[in-house]
Image (tube, rainbow, N blue to C red; front, side):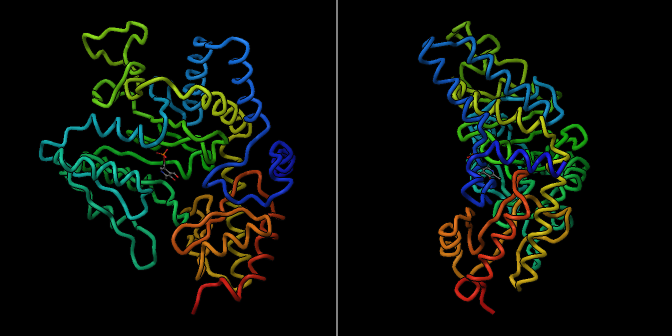
Length: 384
Ligand SMILES: Cc1ncc(COP(=O)(O)O)c(C=O)c1O
């Protein structure tokens, strides 16, 4: 499999010029995805407004996301962003009764905190689960926070700041036992790990196409467990969320009986072309193989960092780590910049540079990173 993955590097022209360790921000562009954008442009020039084809593209993305998550197409909403999916769910939850708590964690991406805090005028109470002194959030912290007043536990799978992966199976068990609904924000994991919504027994799952799904910005998805779809009535809605999109009925709101009820307006058509191509490429490899390769690469990166005396803030335990290795620095912006000058693309958050790995990375990428860091140590290694 390693050789097959190595051979696929040729499909990502950027990799010929850069050590690309930035898939946690934005994936490298694949030839197939570039061609998909071009196909949209060709269609615009040749046909103009090819609505039937465009709607079919949206449905193709729905079907591919369902395959990826081991879900059914009727359980998938194709959204413009993770934020759009979260807002649709938030609008459908009633916080007026005694079950008004939303439990989130210290590891959330801002949007999965801000949107729940935005429900406070609707009587929602947002509870933050804190990391411990080691920087991780063990299950006991969730045990303490989730109770019979909890409406929803909405947590990230992998933390965008430090690459730590939460025990979402454990969190799910606690939430279910206390009658709370469960939402996982999988934007930092989907495409880099195998996700099966059925075995996870999750109620809602959100993600997008920009990172490990090899697609583009401006398109995401929301999974809603079948049994909940018709129980929830979003007030964040629009004409593409209706049962009959072409009815053009202005007398009533008649939501689709499927998860399409959580969509809103005109689909992000050009992004559907790119997302379809990215998902097809990813599924042709398979997420179990990708997960195994990324685990190997991140493990080796952490070991090599230790060998040059550079600590990391990402857990060493394979089960507690996603695709990102977070490297602390006394000047993380300066370090990312210095690496970029050596054609090594990373990103930074807080005091850490983030090196994120996908199946198209290899051992030479780690060599390049470590050689550069070793040379940059006097200026950028953390103090003390
Ligand atoms: C974990 C996580 N959730 C949500 C988002 C943002 O999602 P969107 O911009 O699609 O709303 C990001 C973006 O980086 C993310 O890493």
